[in-house]
Image (cartoon, rainbow, N blue to C red; front, side, top):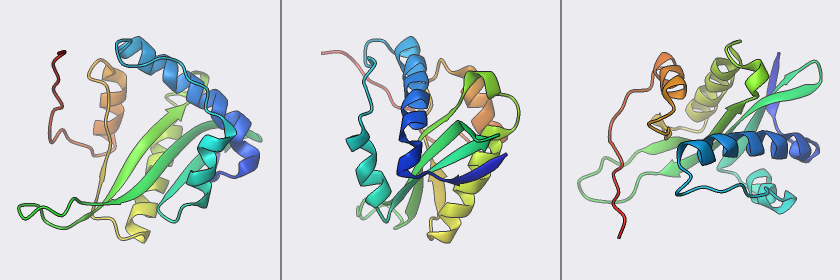
Length: 153
């Protein structure tokens, strides 16, 4: 297993993994999500950014997972301690390759990236219905800090 930074040559594989990730989003919250194509233009700002990257997990020359991370500055609000956040925007491991430690390897690389970039902590979001994902994040050291709630108008 090899974890590396994604390149433009990986876009086709990333598009397939994003489609799989969107399957989960549509399944868990169809009121908010639909399938959308991730055109090549979606990836350009990520590859050109100094504050975000995509890591891919590659096995036998095939990309089987990815993690999209970005460095964010905490909002400048008087009651908030100024911190840098490593935000995990998206993470997916191909269904056929789950429970093999690939997600944990991606997470370790992301954490190292965050430390290198001066992040103070890492944050992400997970669907409450995604109990398998929540267990994974807890094994990686994440703990619930806040709940997002909403109401339809």
